[in-house]
Length: 428
Image (cartoon, rainbow, N blue to C red; front, side, top):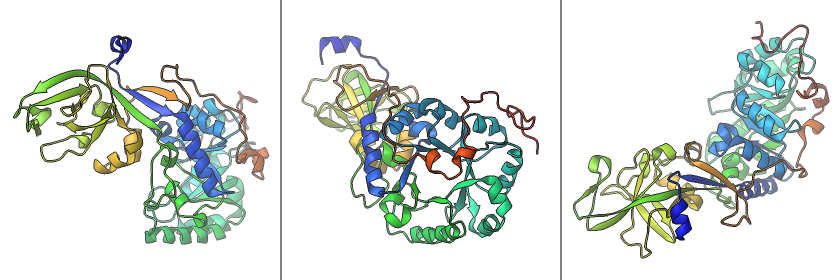
């Protein structure tokens, strides 16, 4: 370490996020699905990596369709990527979200027949109501319309006309296991539903579903974790580029004697004289306690220089302890220990966690640093900005009725419909 680095290091852990890697993962998935378009899942603050930065990066890579969990996320995303892209809200049109949905041109995903009927009442008299997606439950038994109610939508032409549906979707339960019989069961159920609505775009595949092959792709696929460096299939054709690294500075070096215990609850006893490093990251920063190393179970490692060093003792809220006894290099405070990176999926498996869970639990107190390929080590990280990259698909231009139903808040900031003020709670 240079003297200048030693003087200037901070105790705060740093999460580096490679935006080039995210764009490359998007393009790799786009190549896999051919003519199908991609709707990027950016819910949960862009899987914990920063919704607005991630949204702008994917927009720059050509993505024009996005999915969020809640209307508030959609509002933040809209502010970052402009009016052109389509944004769907998985949780649907909650009564208090009407103003946000309308004011930010967000398309709700309808998850039940009662929700569909309530939405029709909500938009009564609105000239440019957002189009919607219908979400059918084909076996996950989470949100979604039961297959048994598909006939109601198919036969009630007045309801369908009022809803102005532009997408019918479902969600796979077991796509991470390529030969799981549930995949085919859900595909068959989705095809039965789709046959009742032949003029609507269809979407079934998440990241794992993309790897199941073309029969699962339909018109639109909805990758999430695959964009952010996670593997969600037991049969990957190619692994995505890793996106994140968590860097935690060494705060103190200590020598411990054989027989000394380390960490809370004394779960690790030094089997010999050891040298340890205390680093500034703990479970409050996204390192699960299940990464802890005990006397009988060393399961996790961090990278310190070119060395992989074991995590020992129980991980605490702010600190993690590393065994550096066998590291030849002289370690001093300020050196960076690196967690996750290319071994994100392996560490998730070893600690009995999902890679999704690890990403979304990365602590907000970590400093986020966004990098791109080609940035020098000492260069100031750049801020992602929207680009004019050619999109794979412009949903607003290609939807048959989008010109009648899309809405730009910039064109009419004081919108009302037949006396309805959408800042107020809609009447039922």
